[in-house]
Image (cartoon, rainbow, N blue to C red; front, side, top):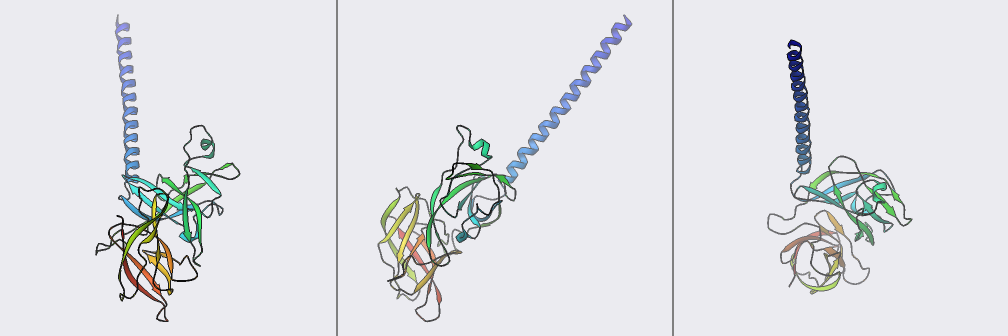
Length: 286
């Protein structure tokens, strides 16, 4: 009888130890999960919602941001999720995939489709290239991004995004100085838009209506000045050069806002020495 009681006690103690051990392990796992989730949320919330300029790094000299953009892309943060838009050097890369090449080949894999971007080089030459909106899981850390070109083969690459700088969308006086084109609910094509110019000496003017260009549902405008002496325009930190070689200076610039003043800088050589003049343009959507 004593042996039976002792055996029962031992079994009871052993069961308690096992339960306690399992409970401890479960608690540790739960704590680890909570810590991981908290860490993930912290990383996502590292930047407040908004638009940033950020550096985009790759592990290949054949795959990089177009030189016209100085190795940078436009990082958009919304509800804690980060996406960077990059313009590449040509139309040779057809798709990107956030992950490994072997996963990109699987049925149902969601690849990133290209946009058609217009880039302007320092000599004024413009070119159409492919761009992509790439999800960014974390800043300052490499992640996998596979690509496929015209040869139909997927390649693995490591990329990273760093040094985000907030793009000021509005000046203190209420005018926009953002160089990102606004999204419009319009089919791609050419339209007309009334435009009002203010600033400077009052002697310069721009043609109105101007040509409104919609590319990938983004708004751009073809601005023709009343003088052939403007050699570049500047919006924020971006510089734009004339798209023509004869006649009055004409530029294609992004429209960052409608029915509200948009600050631009125009450099003129009319006075002999190049001189930057600040203007505002208002594009009337109606």
